[in-house]
Image 1 (spheres, rainbow, N blue to C red):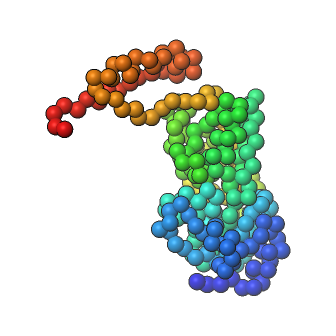
Image 2 (spheres, helix red, strand yellow):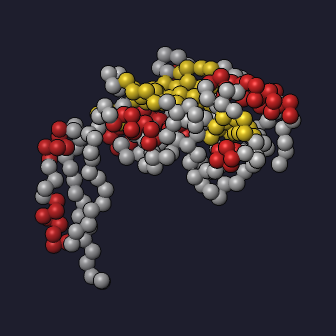
Length: 256
């Protein structure tokens, strides 16, 4: 593994409020531990970013010294894109604030937040958006990659609910994109991946969702199927503005 010069490390330490972690430190090992434990890559250091200014500073150093960069938030990157060998990993987990505007039905989410944090904040207002099926998944990574979730059939993918974003470009400029500002960039971010910049904040559309929802797979003996399906209340589905409930009956004949 290559080692960055002391000069580069010292510059990052001076410019980053979040801190810099090297391979011998516990914080480094924590940042390099992904959901997919088969991914083993060795970055030169981890830059813990506490604000967009930290991201700008880290990208500036990486650009001037021609060092590869990876972005780590939730760390669910199955392909291992949250890590890079011999480079700088930007750890955004300190940027995890979630602010909910129930009147506008918008959640402003930090680039390092997970879906558990979003769900907890939005549920207080009876709102939700399409998020990951695993609560520890990072919001930014899932949304920028498309984002399949429980609410997608009614409210679209996670990226369909992205109405604005703030990101630091490769050139080190903090940019806001929405319907009125750089709309082409917003179009690209909605499922186009994370290579358009380091997203430091997202704004997601929210939708009314009851606090308790019953769903999933329920199994009964075949001769009790009719009785099990009968209590499903049609008026509850109509009250929620959704389609009438449907029950699919699977009947296996023959064999054991």
